[in-house]
Image 1: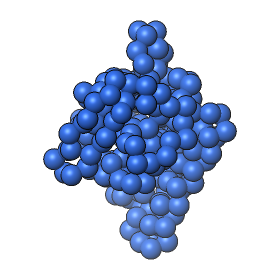
Image 2: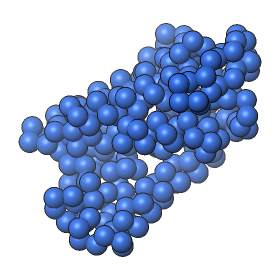
Image 3: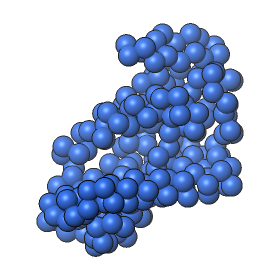
Image 4: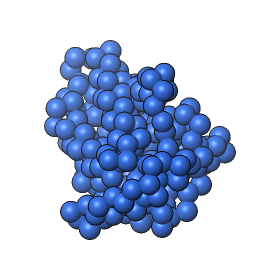
Length: 221
Protein backbone atom coordinates (compact mmCIF):
# COMPACT_ATOMS: atom_id res chain seq x y z
CA UNK A 1 0.00 0.00 0.00
CA UNK A 2 2.87 2.36 0.74
CA UNK A 3 4.48 1.71 -2.63
CA UNK A 4 1.12 2.06 -4.36
CA UNK A 5 0.58 5.45 -2.73
CA UNK A 6 4.05 6.61 -3.78
CA UNK A 7 3.53 5.41 -7.36
CA UNK A 8 0.18 7.21 -7.64
CA UNK A 9 1.46 10.47 -6.13
CA UNK A 10 4.39 10.69 -8.57
CA UNK A 11 2.47 9.38 -11.58
CA UNK A 12 1.27 11.67 -14.34
CA UNK A 13 -2.32 11.30 -13.11
CA UNK A 14 -1.29 12.01 -9.54
CA UNK A 15 0.63 15.12 -10.52
CA UNK A 16 -2.41 16.31 -12.48
CA UNK A 17 -5.04 15.76 -9.79
CA UNK A 18 -2.90 16.27 -6.69
CA UNK A 19 -3.26 12.60 -5.71
CA UNK A 20 -5.49 13.23 -2.71
CA UNK A 21 -7.16 9.76 -2.76
CA UNK A 22 -8.64 10.60 0.63
CA UNK A 23 -11.62 12.80 1.59
CA UNK A 24 -9.83 13.81 4.80
CA UNK A 25 -6.92 15.18 2.75
CA UNK A 26 -9.27 17.16 0.50
CA UNK A 27 -11.17 18.58 3.49
CA UNK A 28 -7.88 19.63 5.05
CA UNK A 29 -6.84 21.61 1.99
CA UNK A 30 -10.36 23.05 1.80
CA UNK A 31 -9.90 24.31 5.36
CA UNK A 32 -6.56 25.85 4.39
CA UNK A 33 -8.14 27.69 1.46
CA UNK A 34 -6.35 25.74 -1.26
CA UNK A 35 -9.40 23.98 -2.74
CA UNK A 36 -12.71 25.51 -3.76
CA UNK A 37 -15.88 24.09 -2.22
CA UNK A 38 -17.16 22.81 -5.58
CA UNK A 39 -13.89 21.05 -6.38
CA UNK A 40 -13.76 19.54 -2.88
CA UNK A 41 -17.26 18.14 -3.31
CA UNK A 42 -16.41 16.41 -6.57
CA UNK A 43 -13.07 15.15 -5.24
CA UNK A 44 -14.83 13.52 -2.28
CA UNK A 45 -17.48 11.98 -4.51
CA UNK A 46 -14.77 10.63 -6.81
CA UNK A 47 -12.80 9.18 -3.89
CA UNK A 48 -15.79 7.26 -2.53
CA UNK A 49 -16.86 6.16 -6.01
CA UNK A 50 -13.37 5.02 -6.98
CA UNK A 51 -12.85 3.05 -3.78
CA UNK A 52 -16.21 1.31 -4.04
CA UNK A 53 -15.66 0.54 -7.73
CA UNK A 54 -12.35 -1.13 -6.92
CA UNK A 55 -13.71 -3.41 -4.20
CA UNK A 56 -16.89 -4.24 -6.13
CA UNK A 57 -14.79 -5.18 -9.16
CA UNK A 58 -12.67 -7.52 -7.03
CA UNK A 59 -15.80 -8.96 -5.44
CA UNK A 60 -17.25 -9.65 -8.90
CA UNK A 61 -14.04 -11.34 -10.08
CA UNK A 62 -13.02 -13.22 -6.93
CA UNK A 63 -16.37 -13.66 -5.21
CA UNK A 64 -16.30 -15.07 -1.69
CA UNK A 65 -12.53 -15.50 -1.80
CA UNK A 66 -12.40 -11.74 -1.47
CA UNK A 67 -15.54 -10.92 0.52
CA UNK A 68 -15.45 -13.63 3.22
CA UNK A 69 -12.89 -14.21 6.02
CA UNK A 70 -9.99 -14.16 6.32
CA UNK A 71 -9.80 -11.38 3.69
CA UNK A 72 -13.27 -9.84 4.22
CA UNK A 73 -12.61 -7.25 1.50
CA UNK A 74 -9.77 -5.94 3.69
CA UNK A 75 -12.33 -4.30 6.00
CA UNK A 76 -11.08 -1.93 8.69
CA UNK A 77 -12.35 -3.01 12.10
CA UNK A 78 -11.45 -1.96 15.65
CA UNK A 79 -8.87 -4.21 17.28
CA UNK A 80 -9.13 -6.01 20.61
CA UNK A 81 -8.50 -2.86 22.71
CA UNK A 82 -11.85 -1.54 21.50
CA UNK A 83 -13.43 1.36 19.65
CA UNK A 84 -12.10 4.16 21.85
CA UNK A 85 -8.51 3.05 21.32
CA UNK A 86 -9.16 2.59 17.60
CA UNK A 87 -10.59 6.11 17.37
CA UNK A 88 -7.62 7.62 19.20
CA UNK A 89 -5.15 5.69 17.08
CA UNK A 90 -6.80 6.85 13.85
CA UNK A 91 -6.76 10.48 14.99
CA UNK A 92 -3.08 10.19 15.91
CA UNK A 93 -1.87 8.60 12.67
CA UNK A 94 -3.93 11.03 10.58
CA UNK A 95 -2.49 13.98 12.52
CA UNK A 96 1.09 12.80 12.01
CA UNK A 97 0.60 12.04 8.33
CA UNK A 98 -0.98 15.40 7.51
CA UNK A 99 1.54 17.30 9.64
CA UNK A 100 4.31 15.62 7.65
CA UNK A 101 2.64 16.37 4.31
CA UNK A 102 2.08 20.03 5.16
CA UNK A 103 5.60 20.51 6.53
CA UNK A 104 7.38 18.92 3.58
CA UNK A 105 5.10 20.46 0.96
CA UNK A 106 5.81 23.95 2.33
CA UNK A 107 9.58 23.60 1.93
CA UNK A 108 11.45 24.06 -1.36
CA UNK A 109 14.11 21.71 -0.05
CA UNK A 110 11.75 18.97 1.13
CA UNK A 111 8.70 19.18 -1.12
CA UNK A 112 9.95 16.61 -3.64
CA UNK A 113 9.98 14.05 -0.81
CA UNK A 114 6.34 14.58 0.25
CA UNK A 115 5.05 11.51 -1.57
CA UNK A 116 7.87 9.30 -0.32
CA UNK A 117 7.27 10.43 3.28
CA UNK A 118 3.53 9.79 2.96
CA UNK A 119 4.06 6.33 1.48
CA UNK A 120 6.63 5.41 4.13
CA UNK A 121 4.24 6.44 6.91
CA UNK A 122 1.46 4.32 5.38
CA UNK A 123 3.78 1.29 5.36
CA UNK A 124 4.85 1.91 8.96
CA UNK A 125 1.25 2.34 10.10
CA UNK A 126 0.22 -0.95 8.49
CA UNK A 127 3.03 -2.74 10.28
CA UNK A 128 2.52 -1.23 13.74
CA UNK A 129 -0.88 0.48 14.03
CA UNK A 130 -3.13 -1.93 12.12
CA UNK A 131 -3.78 -4.18 15.18
CA UNK A 132 -5.43 -1.21 16.92
CA UNK A 133 -7.81 0.05 14.24
CA UNK A 134 -7.21 -1.85 11.03
CA UNK A 135 -5.29 1.21 9.75
CA UNK A 136 -7.80 3.13 7.69
CA UNK A 137 -6.63 6.77 7.54
CA UNK A 138 -9.26 7.17 4.86
CA UNK A 139 -13.08 7.26 5.10
CA UNK A 140 -13.46 6.28 1.43
CA UNK A 141 -11.16 3.29 1.88
CA UNK A 142 -13.17 1.98 4.86
CA UNK A 143 -16.54 2.46 3.18
CA UNK A 144 -15.21 0.77 0.04
CA UNK A 145 -14.29 -2.35 2.02
CA UNK A 146 -17.54 -2.36 3.99
CA UNK A 147 -19.75 -2.32 0.87
CA UNK A 148 -18.91 -5.83 -0.43
CA UNK A 149 -18.05 -7.37 2.95
CA UNK A 150 -21.04 -6.03 4.88
CA UNK A 151 -18.75 -5.30 7.84
CA UNK A 152 -19.87 -1.87 9.02
CA UNK A 153 -18.91 -2.31 12.67
CA UNK A 154 -17.16 0.82 13.94
CA UNK A 155 -17.60 2.66 10.65
CA UNK A 156 -18.20 5.88 12.61
CA UNK A 157 -14.55 5.76 13.66
CA UNK A 158 -13.29 5.75 10.10
CA UNK A 159 -15.70 8.45 8.96
CA UNK A 160 -14.73 10.84 11.75
CA UNK A 161 -11.25 10.13 13.12
CA UNK A 162 -9.14 10.69 9.95
CA UNK A 163 -10.77 14.08 9.16
CA UNK A 164 -10.43 15.15 12.79
CA UNK A 165 -6.75 14.21 12.92
CA UNK A 166 -5.92 15.92 9.64
CA UNK A 167 -7.94 19.04 10.43
CA UNK A 168 -6.13 19.32 13.76
CA UNK A 169 -2.85 19.20 11.84
CA UNK A 170 -4.14 21.94 9.55
CA UNK A 171 -5.11 24.12 12.51
CA UNK A 172 -1.66 23.74 14.05
CA UNK A 173 -0.02 24.45 10.69
CA UNK A 174 -2.09 27.61 10.22
CA UNK A 175 -1.63 28.88 13.79
CA UNK A 176 2.14 28.51 13.43
CA UNK A 177 1.92 30.77 10.40
CA UNK A 178 3.36 28.22 7.99
CA UNK A 179 2.64 28.54 4.30
CA UNK A 180 0.59 26.14 2.20
CA UNK A 181 1.70 26.61 -1.41
CA UNK A 182 -0.75 24.21 -3.03
CA UNK A 183 -3.09 21.28 -2.45
CA UNK A 184 -1.07 19.00 -4.72
CA UNK A 185 1.04 16.38 -2.99
CA UNK A 186 3.54 16.61 -5.84
CA UNK A 187 3.75 19.77 -7.91
CA UNK A 188 5.53 20.39 -11.19
CA UNK A 189 5.27 22.91 -13.98
CA UNK A 190 4.14 20.41 -16.61
CA UNK A 191 0.65 19.83 -15.23
CA UNK A 192 -2.12 22.39 -14.97
CA UNK A 193 -3.18 23.24 -11.42
CA UNK A 194 -6.86 23.86 -10.60
CA UNK A 195 -6.23 24.73 -6.96
CA UNK A 196 -5.73 28.09 -5.24
CA UNK A 197 -2.04 27.75 -5.89
CA UNK A 198 0.83 29.93 -4.64
CA UNK A 199 3.47 27.53 -5.93
CA UNK A 200 4.86 30.08 -8.40
CA UNK A 201 5.42 32.55 -5.59
CA UNK A 202 7.94 30.40 -3.75
CA UNK A 203 11.70 31.11 -4.04
CA UNK A 204 12.97 30.00 -7.43
CA UNK A 205 15.25 26.99 -7.41
CA UNK A 206 15.91 23.90 -9.46
CA UNK A 207 15.07 20.67 -7.70
CA UNK A 208 17.22 17.73 -8.64
CA UNK A 209 15.72 14.51 -10.06
CA UNK A 210 14.63 11.78 -7.72
CA UNK A 211 16.60 8.52 -7.91
CA UNK A 212 13.67 6.90 -9.71
CA UNK A 213 13.80 9.45 -12.50
CA UNK A 214 10.73 11.38 -11.30
CA UNK A 215 11.55 15.06 -11.13
CA UNK A 216 10.14 18.37 -10.09
CA UNK A 217 11.03 21.65 -11.71
CA UNK A 218 10.08 24.64 -9.62
CA UNK A 219 10.13 28.27 -10.36
CA UNK A 220 8.62 28.10 -7.00
CA UNK A 221 8.81 26.97 -3.46
